[in-house]
Length: 262
Image (cartoon, rainbow, N blue to C red; front, side, top):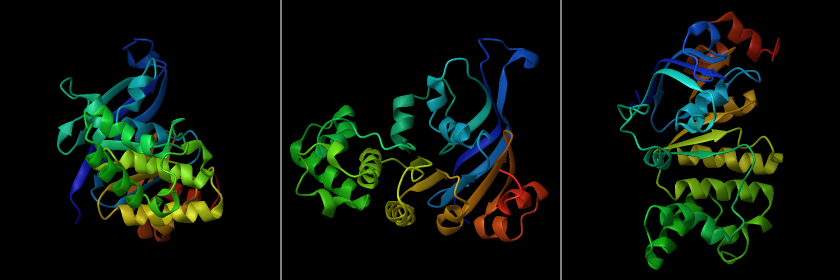
């Protein structure tokens, strides 16, 4: 049994609360009483139809939802045993530990090198040789070093879409996170680039915990160890991927994975 790295307990989230506190007028109830234990150094896939809460849940894990006005959260999310909503938790520290790669590659309009060095510099690393080492290691871990090592000073915007996405993964890895969140990180890519990122995710779980939102159920089957099925803000079922897809316990899970809705 893998150790748990993230645990959600009675997690509820509302959008559009505007400071209201009574349950009847809190706005859209996007996450409903989520309880789940996510294992370390495995890939957990979050699946479900559009608007079911999977991306909202993902963004809760590094408090990206703090940036959305009118969000109200109750319950706990514990990372390495600490409740991330505790007032003593520094969100800059949390987002360093729990990195994120978005649906659309978003490299900064600067060189490949400076993209990867950005986070370490922000956290106070100035030594050139140390930065060189971090940049090379991160690009190697993101399986893109051999493609870009001779053009580190060139603009990141000159890379292909798949390369840009792997650069964004390298940029997240440069902060030495424990967890990497991937929000449909291959949905805008061609099949070859998608396959490279899937292979990369499988390699990354040797060192990192990967949690990925995907609309592609074949992708979940190919790469994930655990799968969580969300529907209308509820976590319907969570378990080993092979069991979820071969012997789902809940009829709603079976109907979704067999294509009857969604």
